Image (cartoon, rainbow, N blue to C red; front, side):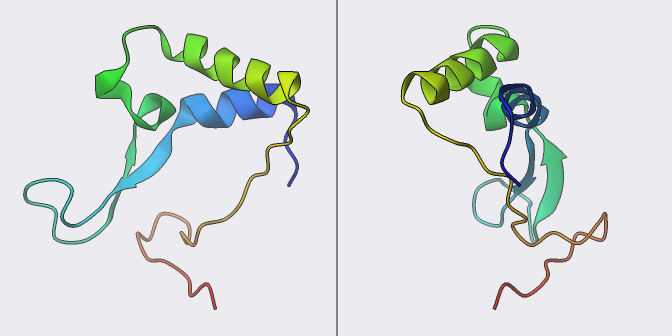
Length: 83
C-alpha cells in the first residue's frame, strides 16, 4: 500500500522488526521485537525527529513510500514463503 506522510511517520516510529540469528548473542531463531526507527539504542534525539526528517526528505524529493509484507504471519514468529 502507498503510504501518506502520517502513515510513513507512524510505521517508521513503530519499528516492528526482528532480532536475527547471528546479530545478537543467544538468538537462535528470528524473534519479533520493537525498536523505534529500527535503531532505538543509537538515537540521540526523540524518534519523532527522525520520522519527520524521513517524511520531509520523501516530500523534498517527490518520493513515495510503500508498506510491504516481508513475510511475517501474524504473531506466530513464522515467515510465509516469498516465492
